[in-house]
Image (tube, rainbow over all chains, first blue to last red; front, side, top):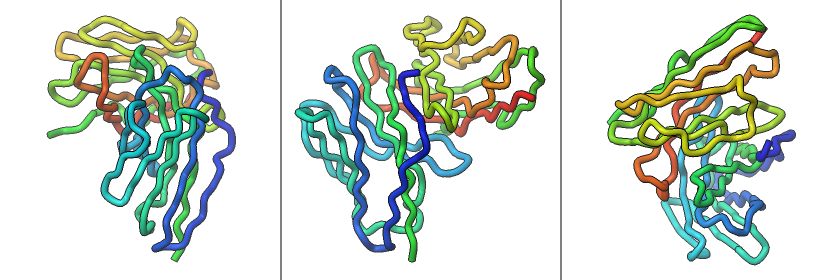
Length: 111
Length: 114
């Protein structure tokens, strides 16, 4: 398959701290990137996206950074809350309209 | 507005049977994509439909097929089920073609093959 899913890396953070989740994407031709959050029993939920002509985009408490030189994407969550606990996926999109997902990172927030 | 609706939420089937899953996209969305999610392989693209035409297909055997109706609702079918087909099947809809604004996912159909 195109998305390699092994055991999920886990990021544990204390409530109130900032979280940074990293992702390496596969194709230098990808021109659109999306971060999704998936809670147990639910489908992926859109968080934020960024086009390849940008290197940073901010949303509410979230920031996505794109480094095309090294094909790296990161999601920063400010003041992490217990409700942020979930699995986070990055996805890359090429002109074929197919999303290619990363392996995912489990974020655990403890009080 | 209503989100992406997938039915049924859960299914248990026996090896060798076939199954049909349904997806109703967000009203006005014409693109529907299907993904398979398993612990071992993560999220993998199955196929994508736009205006009743399959535009893209992932690397899955021919046992996996789909279609889209004129109202944009989509179905996917898996024939001759194998144990390895047990997975969460996710449908996503999008309004633009080619999509530039991400996909909205449904909650998925959890298929268990026994």
